[in-house]
Image (cartoon, rainbow, N blue to C red; front, side, top):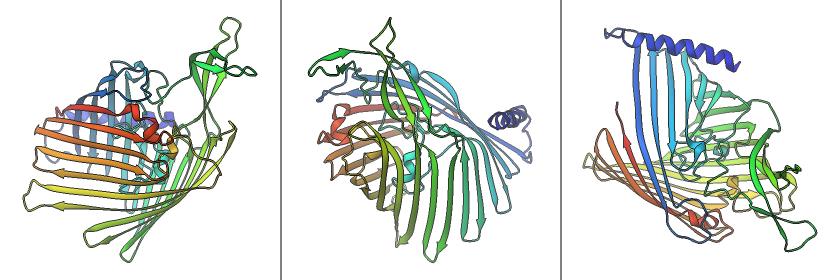
Length: 434
């Protein structure tokens, strides 16, 4: 199925490219547009407790080229190619097609086929469904431009105030992990020797292997309806988790008895959620009730069930000031996670960063040139805190400069406190050639 889809998309985009130079008349049914950007990024990690052996500097550059085309506004296609180069991490140096899809509309039916980037949650803030989003996790905090495409089909049917939606995607929902030279992952260099308290054996990482528990497709089903002033949406997602449970597997060869690999086991994750949203004056108010069935290694090292529930309440508002250049946007959210197991989560478990958390996201646009943003998180259970101010300067439509900081602090049993050594300054320069 995937090869057939790729062949059809290849023919479609070839026809588009052949037609680009032929678009002379305004009444040409084909409309084609190129967009893209080139940006460079630098991060400086200042001194902190438990600092990793990785470099205190990170630098990389990325190019993005996107082709959008439509035919009589009935058929749309998009092809997005990304290229990345990194000064320190070889696995970040690559060129790939991140999106290649065709969409069409027929009456009340809308269909998209191909490689698409998917955000499973539809809340303005964080949703339990976002646990299955697929990213390149070179950096855990900076994922805005790191969503990875999946091959599959997305179809929607509108029936008045009700909409039905079905997603069917490939089983391989893995996020991309960088196990070496990564400040967020510490591979062991020694392991305790059994039956020898206090003694350790030097060990050496040689690679990794991955396995899937199921090869069933990634399926998402949602139903939304407008009931009076309130929109209600129910959604069910069944997938392989994008984050694996991991274990050490010694190679045990005669030549290299101390070599090991990391086994990445992608276990199933099932999420059911109900969203409610409405307007109270100028405020958009929304909430989510969700339940997650997943798996993890418990504190005894055994693979076990991991059921937990989400309760979320949030609001957002946008202000357009009298001065046409000035704008203000605020998003505030509270997330409460109820675990149905009698264990405390480890600070390195990415699916459990939020336990009883307040999230705040704010933006102030002073002029068309200057913008200030703030993102923050406070978790009351683990006493972990995150604070991230940024300032953006855009002197023209083609150039954007952004600088900011990420402060992580708190208890060592919290995600943010455990990774406090990854507090940093960051700098972005983006050029838009088209």
